[in-house]
Image (cartoon, rainbow, N blue to C red; front, side, top):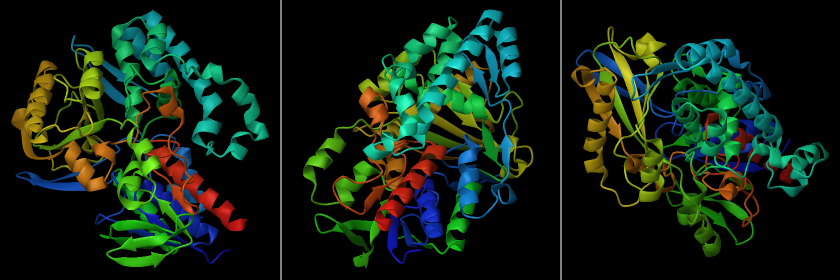
Length: 498
């Protein structure tokens, strides 16, 4: 038990995860969130249409690695299943291809192989079995070190249990890119495109990111994809409630203005001009943004961080639809004609793609109360470049036309059914969440170094300062940011005991 105080900057899932653990460890914890609700990008939006109210999740729409959340709630003394219902989603996703092919994916291996056998070819079904074994091997080799350990801490990396894995690192396939690896397993271009999309789960390009990121398909197909009954924001709500029940003081609508330090050690934060003392600060704000705006006195580190490439951003259309679409599932992907050109435009040219791949999540397929009777709530996401001087007002209209055109080519007339609409551009994402250049996942993994060396959970510049969230280790995505909060909290606990 300790009487030491920790201030948490930001109430995203990582900040809440860290706050819950720290409170349970006995620290006094105060959390400041600049927006009106905790949850970060996992939030809610309600729109009124002529048919009634539509409810949307604003961020993550699929949950993976459910055991990460079970462990967090268990650590806090609560059985997760008593407060949250994780619903398996099968099919996980329905894919629409420009040639007219429609393909469902399943976590159930036999159903997935049957689908591939029937719709693609028996040979590609067998190839999927081999590919899945390959992705599992990467997970088995890397998970303990790269997902569950703050491996920038040398003493933890060199722990005896990690030595066998370190000796086998070439087997995690770091030297070729995701696309090159996937293309070795599948000859059908449709399946190559399908498995090429998984690096986008952490904001990267399959043509640049190392093949080690083929761990991501295993996370989805090996552990399954889930939806949180009542809406994904229910997870943020219950984590907020859990934190408060453990004594965390949460103040919303209060942006931290500065991280205070004496050049060597953190001293607290400044909020609305007031200085608030703390023994430790856990920063859930984007690391790059923190150094640019919150943390003074480290120009060389700031310059170094600003050289890191931001991940993809996104444009989201929230459409309340006044009729239902039985041809769509809970999760849907409508692929572009030329995936490589799409990523080249996003990362190299830094422009909105001419022909974007379209992702549509419809939670009312599972939770009918999220849309009026006879209607649906469409969360429509397009991958976009990070902020680089684009005119998003103009691009908003162009992208809407591109989405409607892609849907029409798949035989889906969406435009006539739109009852109400809201749009979030990369500029909106930056203003809402202060993510670096409007990125969704912080830093891309488009080089070997970036993929394995995200900013550490412990600051190398100021003692007592720690980082969690998508821009720090182990990276973006719901389970990973929750794990980053865990790692940072455990490092704080270790330092407090020294």
